Amino acid sequence: SKWCYENYKKCTTKVCKGNQNCELQAMIADMSLDEDDTPAADVGKGPDRAQCRSYKKSQASACQCVPKDDFRGAVESKLKSFYSSFNPEKLDDSGDLKDSAEVWKKWKGKEGEMLLAVASKYKEKAVTMKEKPKRSPPTTTTTTPASEEEEEEEADEYTSAKADLERRKADAKANEDYDLAQELKDEIAELTKTEIAKLNKLKKEAIEQEEYATAKKLKQKLAKLEEL
Image (cartoon, rainbow, N blue to C red):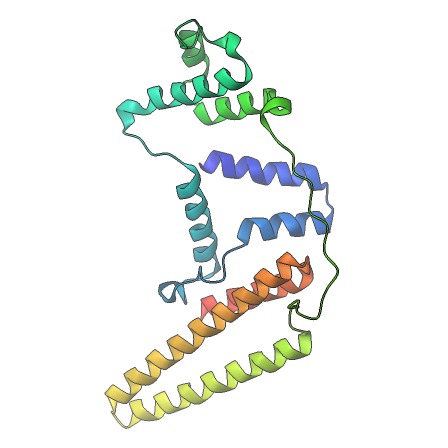
């Protein structure tokens, strides 16, 4: 929910305490997408389109949608399942909540806050902290993010190819060859789609190798492409 997302942002601000590297990692975690997550339909829709799509995708994978009339029962089911694992004393002999009425009196309309409060209270039992895997030494087969010179050279290739297609499209339009103009327009869209996919792949590789400055530059390039 929006409430969960806003609390995530508050949490990262509190934890990072102004540390730019920490804030950058939190930002990358927020905006990180799979390399094929930018469909052609989103080209030109602006950088917020991608972030919203990432948010909605994570919500769809994590949330369980139920009819409005079944909402309370679904929440209680989650609570009973949680308590049966981490604090069975909260349940009666039938496996129901002992204080169901009090729970809903206190938390009705604030179910997200309630679930977070429960998870936080029992985090020592319920949450498994994973250690960050150690980075393996690079090998000759390991792919590395492109250097700035390589990125600039590839960007120039894209810009040059796009400029040539734009020029040809303008000529076709001036000559009223609208079929050709449409074909060239489609080629430009496909070229941009390919460039976005390539940049997303480079960004993903940079994130995996913790090259966050490179990832940030690639994100900025993607934002510019999506604004076209």
